[in-house]
Length: 524
Image (cartoon, helix red, strand yellow):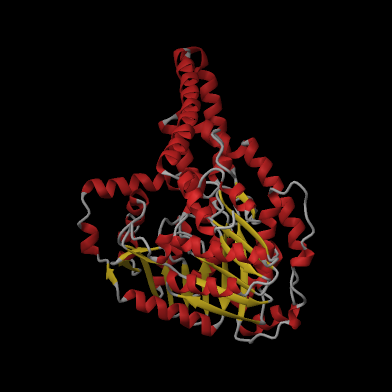
């Protein structure tokens, strides 16, 4: 179609409420049929319990021993699965077996690791830069060395960066940079939803394709349930936009579908990269307000460090490729050819549920353990493992200023209940908790000591730290850290400090519900 408005309207009609409901009902029925089959088998086994009781005991015992001795499991995961097995013995064992030996999960894991290994060969680490960081800050050097030695994410020096304290400004900068594109545009997002924000971006993408710019779009498969029509990729291909859906939802019980692409990446010509908490939907830029004012943040990075985001995108894109490509043409020339400002250091990094390390968790924990004067956190969800909770409490006990901003108006009430269940213990031990009074905080940032900052897509919950594909940038940069801290202080002015008295006002049901839900947080 030549008329962009007609094209947009045509596909909005296809994404009408009846279409969405039909998709949800179809998928729901297919999933329910599979649950019914499982319960039917369970009922059959129950009727023959006397004959199979010994088998049940052996299976539960074997799975239980495996859970306890599996060094890859976080202790809280072990508690969650063991508790489930106590309440629902065979179901709990089945759930754990499915999580570990799911065929679809193993198949995708192998494909992703192959793609990652292939594309990460393009990374290079300048040893001079690593040595500089060792001399400047040995603790930060250790984190940088971990990210390079274990995960192949290099640290960069030549580059410029900027920070956006609200989605509206971030959106405006996206449009400005998209207009400058000459070679390629890569976009990877958790959510893409039709509306004013996406339409403004799509309008530019359409024109850029006509100018000869290569455009690739990838979004998470959960979008087809409520956000986009099933045939939306075909519509994008008609416009000349190469499009892929990450792990399309398949109505088959498989924990493979539990690992979602939560990243937000925009790369333009290998010159600039965007990331942060902002998806491509109207609520992220306050054109809609389902949960009050939406507080979100984002960053841009210019220069050699953009290569890391380019590689992360291409590694993910390559997983679903029928014909693997050579991505060398997309990689930027050597770092010295970019004449950027030397304002500090940055390490773009990614995390995935299949690797040997929980990269986001390791970086966050290093931020906690290395803070001296202050550590300030913004997160939409606060669901902590025992290690991180203990580290935050210990840091507060040392006299370090520890503050955390969470939402006051939640987008997920159950998760909000779990988040609030941590308040009492943290506040009692010196950690200050603030809720963003005007609405919902979706920002994900750590900042400490006017030196270090992490901004990206990683929430402080089990989904982000253990189950999702994520990305972020770790800055050792005074200018950037001061921008993040200034935004934290401005946001604090619109927050309500939570007190012990307020925690005590939670009724018995609220406190009990939060505690019970915490048990299942790792497998929610």
